[in-house]
Amino acid sequence: MAQNLNGQNLNGKTVAVLATDGFEQVELTEPVKALRDAGATVHVVAPKSRQIQGWNHHDRGDKVNVDVTLDQADAGRYDALMLPGGVMNPDALRLEPKAIEFVKSFVTSDRPIAAICHGPWTLIDAGGVRGKRMTSWPSLQTDLRNAGATWVDEQVVTDHGLVTSRKPDDIPAFCRKMIEEFCEGRHAGHRHAAE
Image (cartoon, rainbow, N blue to C red; front, side):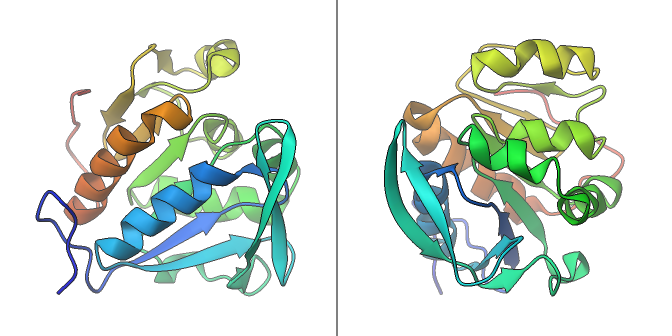
């Protein structure tokens, strides 16, 4: 039985990681590793097949294999969703109607979502930020506030199953809270205070 350092496990849970070219490499690879170490089955879901290109800040990083294309992805089979950052990645996903519908299915069914850095951008278009307390890369704060979120500058914030963090330095705290919330599952009818 796999479990993370907190003793929590995600055995039997399947997590979608929605991304496309331009994702910030460590914001995808480190959370995926943490999820797998905790026992989750993780699928990288993308608008295109085969591989997507990562970035390390302003330089090209490694490519990551795509497990399921958006055309083939059934959002209903996933227990939780993770959205990595990188400027180009969420900006491109916002222009993909299938990506927005995929994310919206998690929002409307109260399944947990974790988003880091620029990842929350996609949540705006999916209707997933209104009334939520959250954080992000600082340049998103006006967009998030305009969409009805309460933006705060904190390492990691949880609100009703939504976990958000600001940047790569926050990844350890982000992964801990993500696994905790993904273990809890659906959050209908109650809210969590921020950490």
